[in-house]
Image (cartoon, rainbow, N blue to C red; front, side, top):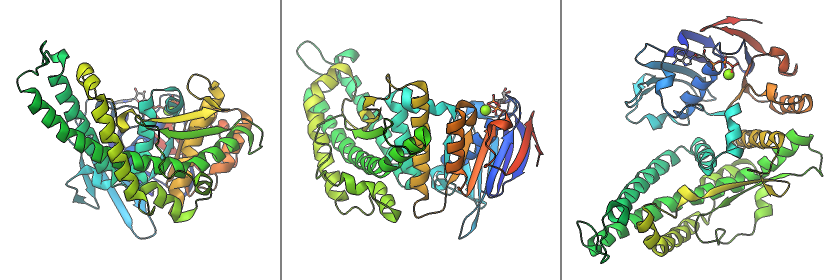
Length: 416
Ligand SMILES: Nc1ncnc2c1ncn2[C@@H]1O[C@H](COP(=O)(O)OP(=O)(O)OP(=O)(O)O)[C@@H](O)[C@H]1O
Ligand SMILES: [Mg+2]
């Protein structure tokens, strides 16, 4: 990334920062706008903030819209991404001055891995946080999954609405078991159609996630060891696995777990995106059949409860440390190290066979003890581009020397 320019984004009326390869450190007291800068970088990559789910807080108070411009240079060309953030309305996105008909077409132009204090929720929070982690990583790996993901969300929403309207909660089913306005047969027929949609799109999403988890697993285990103990064996390690919400035979044709650990280069990418694995199609078809069967099985209780009980929206990315579930068992430091390991692993996976994504470390060093700080710095010092924020510049280890900016009340000054 070569440049970040903001207009009316968060606390910035206007700012334009050139960005060089290597390390850039944004220092300055609390609340001066350091995270706002890297939040904008993350938004340019993912069209979402890592801090808020709504766009309204991103618009500078009193302004109507925010504009993020990001200059990106890769091996083949210079790109300019321009995003107009309109709260409550669709964003407008331009790539090299050409308006995109769908904002999500810009995904993949700028690739980032952002680690921030909020990431503790990856370990301690609800399963939804971990599903989002997988889906975000999947989309960064293979942007076409943005469409799969939004298709799935849409189908899920519609099917759930149908379940609600047909179920007893809506008063839809009378004592005789008849369904509201339509006949039972009509409702069931419509549900069958939605089951088929859900199973088809859901299978594609969940098999891709399974491939992704297989590909990222060795990196997570390795990164956790590095961060927690500098790679020494014997310290309780971390493990991750994908668990489907239905059937337990999630791993057709399983085996090869060890081989996955050896996956390198484009192979790992291929696995994660499902482009290379020769059995990808078969796995998706098997998952689709499995999901359809599961939906048929749970339909009665779905109608009773008005929720969709099977599908990737209920799957879980299971995390454990020392053989115990991370959530509810891991210490604060272990949880933090595991969250960090998930991000470092994402970085390793994304850089495999491609250019490095931009690595962003928001306020990370203050949370770590001296040993972890130094180990983390050593791990990331080789990245092509690292953006670091720190309220106390001394917290950033000396190996991460680079450009420094002092951030204060909506402005930046070059500080060496
Ligand atoms: N939409 C907005 N309009 C105006 N100001 C905003 C807006 N959103 C956030 N701010 C201001 O931005 C500041 C927070 O900026 P930011 O989170 O980047 O701080 P920081 O430098 O990272 O601080 P810390 O060291 O505490 O993490 C707050 O003072 C907040 O009031
Ligand atoms: Mg901050």
